[in-house]
Image 1 (tube, helix red, strand yellow):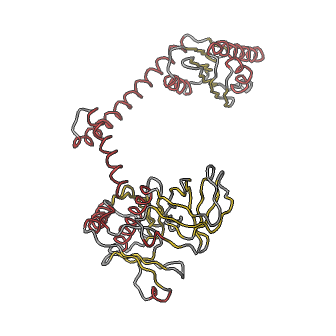
Image 2 (cartoon, helix red, strand yellow; image 1 turned 60 degrees about the vertical axis):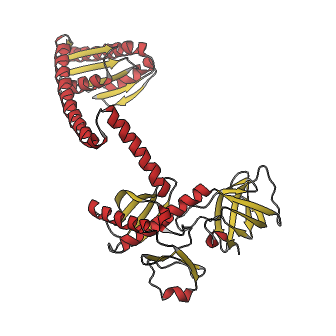
Image 3 (cartoon, helix red, strand yellow; image 1 turned 180 degrees about the horizontal axis):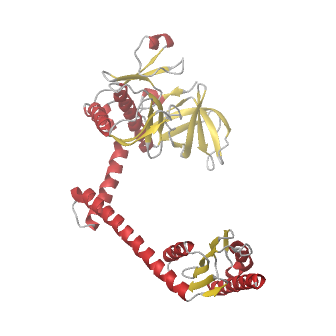
Length: 412
């Protein structure tokens, strides 16, 4: 059984231990060490494992296997043998961050348990965010603000955090927020007057060390609610980023920070209005352009044949123009642009069964080293050789003229 130094003193950053066993690891260039005692917390209960060094070799992962705790260690530069003494050094920044987040979770879960009567059914401490899953919700913004205030009041009162080991019989007589799923080494973590639950994680000795609890997101999840939140240094660093970005945005808009939201809302509304105006203008332009192209088109057997290969038109305009031709009957439109790369749209608004845009495209698309697809009525795509687009469209145009001419000869 590995002695858990992290339970005795969660602030212990260094320790000495003896190696009890060594075995290969599935992690490349690593071995797994079993020590007689450790200050490294193993992954469990929603909290990731500690990291750090053993004899200056990186400890990348720690996990429990029954009553034993195994350390995955990069062993490229050191050899570890049973009986050797090793010095362990924790990545203290990582450990204290986990302590802040985990105790913050206890506090937040306690205020949602009472008075909101929402039990915590899941907890995940990630690299960037922390989440708890509640069996009730979602909650209104007003309720979330109330919960935040209650949680931070517990933090600011700097209440003590106590932990004790109890027997299976002893904990059953207690009013725990959550019943443990184990029957041995039951460890209770208590904030007197606020919370009492079974937990194996690491926590500060006072709530004030959590620093701050801030809910950043609330969403419906599995019939209840998932809350994303930040504590301590994470909350500070995130707020600093938000403040910097907001100040940069406000400076760019030549407004003060308090006016930023109102200014952005105004810009969004203006952008929507301009977008509608732009759409109307493009539609009007495409209609006029279509009518002009139809007036100059070759007409065979009652079908207008339009071909365009433009080296300046933007793809957005090509889209509007092709949509305009889709509404035109008895027309074949072969439309392409070359800048910055060849793009094309082929439209067949006729009733001639022998005329297929997909078939004609397959026969000619090699000229632009391109790809495309569609059906008899419509085909589109792009390619890599701009100089081949005009020849491709001309070849397709010639095939269309030939097909329509043959149809006219058969009719006569």
